[in-house]
Length: 130
Image: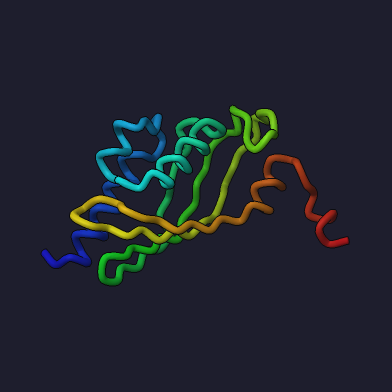
């Protein structure tokens, strides 16, 4: 199997393993050596326990995998000073993973924080337009 296909299948396996379950350090360590990715996961897991991940599109090139996806969950813990609201998060994102020896060694992530703030009831869309 070629490297692109292996990396693609690895990321699918990774998403399936961490989606909808408690994302412990032990679980994450099976897939990554990138501390900033673990810290990001830990941060979101504390605010949206057992959040789910969905891949909508994936592109592979050399040792990079880019995923356009969604994260969904319920706001049950503090998030950047916002107390739990019980509201649903449905957050679109794009993430780029660098993979070496079937381990994530680096990532770059972009997500629409304005959509998340609106979903949590912190801002209203009409507030942005005015």
